[in-house]
Image (tube, rainbow, N blue to C red; front, side, top):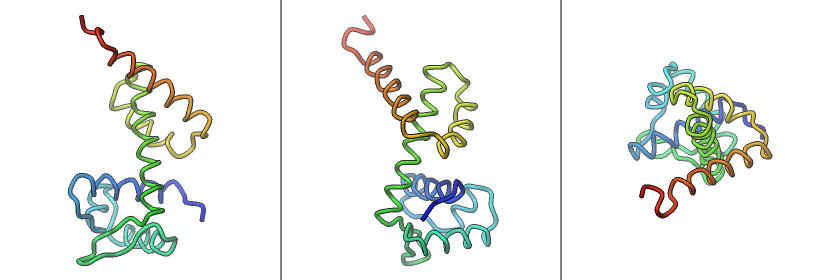
Length: 133
């Protein structure tokens, strides 16, 4: 199933909330994104039907293996792109975060891999022994 940008955003938000609190419900996603509970409930139904999430006790949202893989990939793209924009290109961190939220959904694998390589090369130079001497 082709997942739209909004679906990726929901998965990414579920993962981030889970990392932050350990327990995620639809209302938590709605609050985080500023959406209505009915909108989030509909999206969760679609994600559940597609096999990306499951419902646990107490209304807990659980990422399935495929949901976790997809959410992790989106979150990685977000972090790498944001880092590239702010740390390497010098874009204001807040602007870099906002831009990363949009770019993470449309960037090609080839371009992302090149950006990731540049970020990794930059961070390895910064962490090189004797750098701060």
